[in-house]
Length: 158
Image (tube, rainbow, N blue to C red; front, side, top):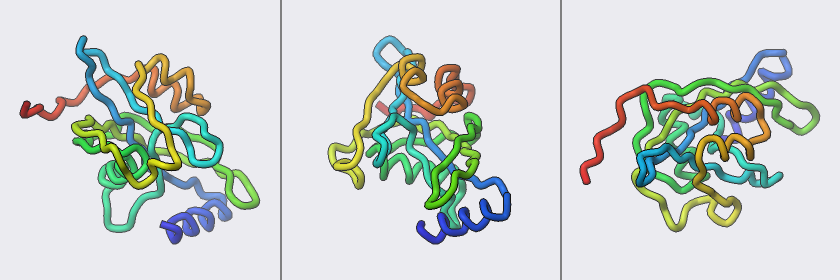
């Protein structure tokens, strides 16, 4: 993935917008209300959603699913259509660049007790309004706060 980050840095130097993908893991609680999972970032410990660079040979949806497993330790079904897009300023080695993030919803079916980044991140299930208050990126905060599930949910076999 380092090669993808370098490619993004080259694009940014040319003034091009760069792109990432993200997942908003969600579940329905006992009352049928939506809860979303946030994770802390590795460096600043701020609450974010799992996100990363596009992956060669993988769709944005598949890449978002992989990021959710690596960063949040969740498995599930990622809905086909993006839930939205948000933008933020990313710090690179010697500059900030504007990044557009395509966000997918991931209906969580399993939470792993141990996952790739478990020692570097914390995760929390929250109501969308509460999650939105913890998120620093205004566009992502709005997206989470106004979250609605408009696509059919995968059928739960249990």
